[in-house]
Image 1 (tube, rainbow, N blue to C red):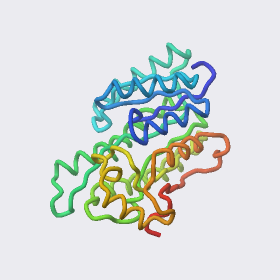
Image 2 (cartoon, rainbow, N blue to C red):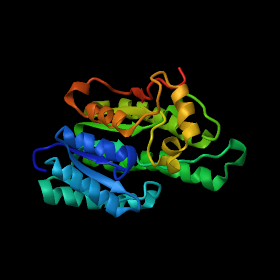
Image 3 (cartoon, rainbow, N blue to C red):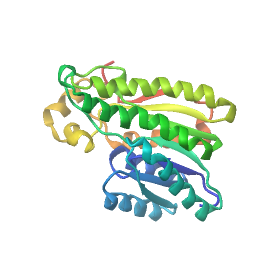
Length: 253
């Protein structure tokens, strides 16, 4: 890991996060990824990245448990110190997440708090704790959702948290500018993964509805998204800052 740039990808063991991690590796970037519970999946992604000639390692992280972040950062930075002689990295990809489909009137405080902890509070404080180790000139990519722009019934808590992330990202861009750190949002539309129990991928009615409201006529797939995140971590994207890039094929235009 001595000469390559390094990305930390939360939730990098499956779905979009896996695609982001592999896409970054294809750009010559080494990867630290996190997983919540399935180490076997994470190890498989690590092996895939290593087969591409890049270094990779996986660490367990509950992205909604802020109290665990100090220990997590310590483990990651110690690993980097041993591997590279430095405890710093270059790119932070805040991707980890979970779905919640519940009508506004039925959303419980417990459900709300779970989404809040993972999708907003966790992102806020993990970024804060990672900043001392993020190299000047680095990048922060926060993953939002098309649901912050358009509304689907049942996504009020999730969508509003993603809206908060988009505002936070602009503040990060403003406050971290003196360090040369750019912060941007990538907001996927509906993607065929196992997210939310795979309902976009596996429910034919849902999939057909998404295709009907998407200008390009289909639901998205992970390969549509990972490369955009990887691009934002290249020198070609150096002047993109404080922006929201929706990757939805033109949903609900």
